Image (cartoon, rainbow, N blue to C red):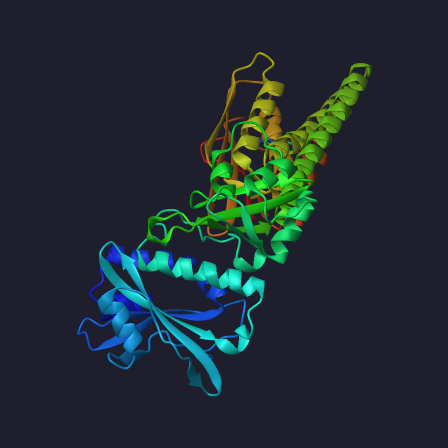
Length: 482
Ligand SMILES: Nc1ncnc2c1ncn2[C@@H]1O[C@H](COP(=O)(O)OP(=O)(O)OP(=O)(O)O)[C@@H](O)[C@H]1O
Ligand SMILES: [Mg+2]
């Protein structure tokens, strides 16, 4: 539509906006009319019309099989369209036209914005479908007639209401016609079923919709103004009601052609299934968070038990081993604690890194001056990467404090950077350096074995431990990250 309007016509951007708002919502008119709609705009040279948009009804057969958008017809070929353009009023023919043995009734509805006619809708009703109209069809056609008048008067679409956006109830979902006092004069079978599911046992027709709605959908809390507007049919608005475990989306379209209030259309759609699925997702997230929380608690209990046990061991080295185990369990608990606070299965690893640094700093600060700091950012990581990485870093940090600084003062730095699908984490200390016979491949008691298994085996990365030029040690972990 933008292409056609901008390249062929003199319409302004505000006019184009209006046509967009119309087209966003004109399914309603097509469905109520059981008719095809074609939007014609006038070429700037005044000699022809261009088709800017087309809509088929979902309630009946189409009169056009082919696509018309972008095609043109010469002025004068369609007297009704000409007349609607120049006179600004709705025009219709008495007798149907015959298209390939199909009787088609043709009408032309001017689209008005202010005092200007922007375009003309030609409405082509396939009369084979309308036969002898039922009550449903009569009610629909009457509403369609009023809607067409509102369009011709420049009072539909309602600018800025954004009423036809996705998820809005459609004619086929359920339609209720209200008279000027808010009484139901017609309700489609789908609308009746929806109100039955809300718990209504009485008839809809002949009652005030606002009273019926109050009976079956108790209001919660504050007075809901939009509900009054919608079920009273007084304003272009949407709302949602709930009763008996059923959720109903409602949309009102007041019908006031010529400025006289003639009631309203209320469309309704059962959205229970949509709401139920939303709720399920929320509880699933909450469950995952709760599980992480419990895992963390359990790990902390294990750590506490080990710590108790460590105190009772007389042998110093045995006790130190158990204290190591306490630290390792604690590192995993840290990861689960952060995962318990995030909604999805990714986590901001910077938070975890800071907590690991604080933990290592605590353990080492037996009165000595050890400063730890973090440079750069890890960013968001998958929890499948976060847990092994956290453990590996804990080991490397621990070594820096324990062997590098060896209980003395010094600095430990954790530097991280991400580029081109890789994450690089560097732990440096300015301690006494690696022993002479050190070899990263073979060396290592449990600590470095754990690091190698996690970094190389599990995460598919590279591990390097080397002397630093300025003294001390540098450990590098380099991982592929998605
Ligand atoms: N930053 C470092 N500075 C100096 N030496 C280091 C450093 N990191 C590792 N080492 C040396 O590498 C050895 C192996 O480390 P590893 O972590 O595997 O064992 P550990 O720390 O002695 O015992 P644990 O199993 O408790 O970690 C250490 O004993 C130490 O000699
Ligand atoms: Mg170690």
